[in-house]
Image (cartoon, rainbow, N blue to C red; front, side, top):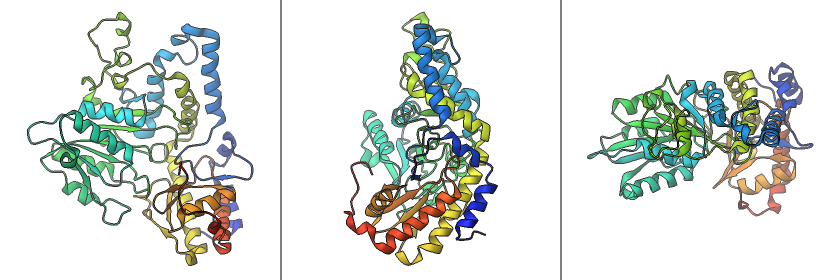
Length: 424
């Protein structure tokens, strides 16, 4: 297995088939970036695709909608097709549009159709807050009280959600289920195929938030019969801060009228007829609302080029080995400092980051930053560390653990308050 020496880390880097892709990214000197699960780094190809789209505006002006390398009118659909292999989707099933929360609002408005006693939405108590806010809002818009109509599956340990507990809550009162693919704190990867089958066996539609998995973990949304999914592109997919999100709708639902209609959801051939009768696209493009944010979408074109060149399967292979190596070093080097690994240890249910728990987590993160390591804090006690397949080397991982050990030995963290910054 692994060895706790720098020489061993160097050997792993020499054998790494993705090592050269590190040169594709802008890495800062004397810094090890382990926060790609919050915001991915800029790649040279993403930068170039942004410059290309800027140039099309500069040189083509209004004609950029139909001319150039990336005609703007079809850009969202083109990026959706390029995203398909990451999630196991057909070309027409993915569209790049909106943001995580606006896309969730759109999907709930479409697929939440309470009928008779079937009026409740099932989620979990560890999901990212924005998803819960959207669910609560949509329940209120339909005249239901979230206190009674939002069911949140309880966690047994405060870290993970037991899949049996989710299935047990799939009662005849549930109209819709919304779950994360990967829990944002602990990094638990849910069994999407199993949960989808259980929901459908009970006549319930189910959708997934893929923000913490897409770009790190292969999915097969079409084959697993997932009804819908949505995700951001600025974490593992490196599309830039506030980059445009994406959504998936299974082909069996294409042609369904979106809950929130807008001009850019039109059939492309009819959109400029300017009629007041909405003619939806027969693809996932129907779920667009407003004009595509071309410049915010632009970096994704370059980033997806990298993913399609490497394949998501190879990304996952390195991610699993990197997180396993990091956990092994933590156990070897930090056992005396009261750290707990809070993420699942097995490859099947571990996402793309390591969840390291400590009662002084907030100020340990501050000390790490002072030492050139960029982690991520999540309340109340989680240090998230994400070795990214494209640009985190094994020597980076080894150095990070050695620096963390030095911080603990010297108690450097004690100079800081144990509370988060405004942005954790």
